[in-house]
Image 1 (cartoon, rainbow, N blue to C red):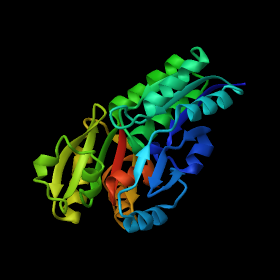
Image 2: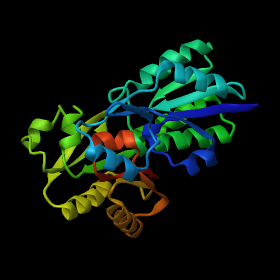
Image 3: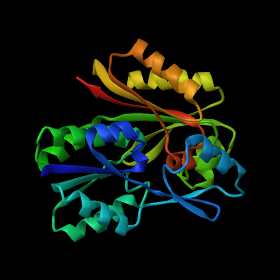
Amino acid sequence: MRSIAIITDSTADLPVPICSEYGITVVPLELMIGSEAMRDGTLTQAEFFARMNAADELPTTSQPPVGTFVEVYRRALETASHVVSVHISEKLSGTLASARTAAKEFEGRVTVVDSMNLSWGLGFQVIEAARASAQGLDVTAIVERVEAVRDRVQMIVHVDALDNLVRGGRISGFAGKVGGMLSVKLSFTVRNGEFVLVRPFRNAKAAMQHGLDWAGENMGKATHAAFAVGYAMAEDRAQSLKQSITERFNATEMYIYEAGTVIATHTGTGWAIAFVPED
């Protein structure tokens, strides 16, 4: 029997090969485009943006039902003694609440962890959990490793327009600071599980340079870091950022990934840099 199973949700934006390599199970969030419901990951990024741009209304997203988590946990516990389930911040989604409710069905055999983040701010925590599990660590030690990454991980996200964030109600806390100008470009980070404005931009090149500088500032005293660069219909910029990061920083790991359809629903097009500073 495998000791500890690692489960997350699709907002981690973990590519299938990485999940396969580390034995990570992903529970998809749900997406509604018009009257059609589907699971996150059903459409490619290009297909999703074509559908979203043609739709009369912004697609909506929702957390996985409790029953989905119950089934996933039951299946995992057929071959594992325990489950560690790491998810998107409870301040950004109801996913954690669904997971916690489902966990009650299994008499202490499921431990649910709030990543207080999303995308690869979450993804790096999930990978750490999987590595710790593969090393044979117990539940307490795995959670400690996850929380250590949670405390260190940094992420800056740049969106090309505010339309999706405003329409999805995700930036009420700082919308007024940019004067309601939907055409402005915006960078934000995640602090204590919530979106926090970094600054607005008019120029895409300036935003990319600032993203690199912000990463340097938030490395602290660390000499190297694991990096991930994500994108939504902006692969050229992501590849450029990846190249700049490898030239400027000591990147012990480097990943590049596509933002999933649930994340892209709320951000629209843009890019992200996530990293875990290491001493």
